[in-house]
Image 1 (cartoon, rainbow, N blue to C red):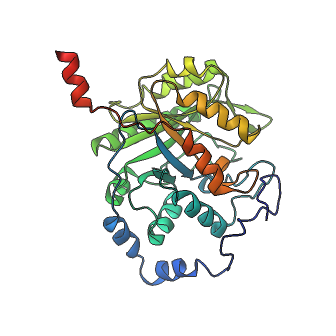
Image 2: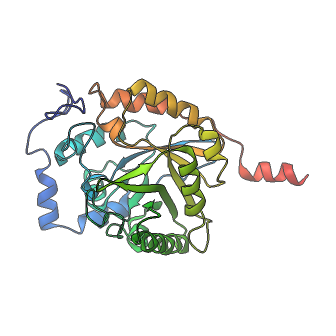
Image 3: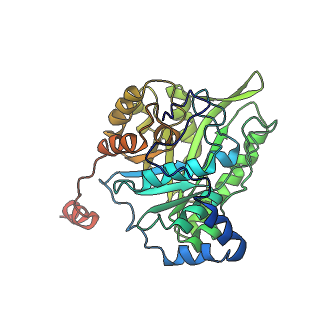
Length: 324
């Protein structure tokens, strides 16, 4: 079976159980024992934490909560929650996948499925800027809160930060983002900030992916909040990534987006960007969960092979050498 994103009938790999009742137990647990989610979170074995020199691989699955269901030219590719959970479990089964970035509903499902042991958890915080909404750029924080992420035993929260110089809603988004960064930092949780310079064209929001626009978005985003101690950047791979990475000292993960070129070209661009200083890894969703050839496991394995997994010397050792 094919899951080419251009097909409106994209389906799961043939090896996956396609019983429509395969996730019925999740509905039953949510109905009869909703506290099971909190217990699963408490019992989960945590990831030891990010380390310099060891790049991390995080799968993103927060698009549906913003009404963004499209992959390629299929407008509802991510609509079937059972298929999405199938694909996520395939990805998370790869030991080189370090974690998940998800909205609360998907995170809770994965906790109940018991597939997040030893994984980094990043919650998606602002999903109110719905795709196509008339006030899309007033991106309210409607998802995870810092307090909820702390209770969950998560490692941090992610926020989409679209900056439109021609839209007055931008200032509210910037203020809310700054407050979220501070709230996460108070709990020593990572704030993964995903900035874009955005414009409205023919009633639709478009992110400007020119090099200078991405650099400007980084400059604005890294100055948000009263501290940057726990702030990371989540950035697109664009032309002249060397200049982009020269704009920040924040740990940076690369996003995948909705690919408009061949899978080989996408992987090649990631490989080049992953070699740059400051790049801490990948946070990718649709490109790998809905690959053109239908091989989710293969796409995930290929992406994992691009990351630097060398074990670095400890920070204390390097600090000692500098002081000598």
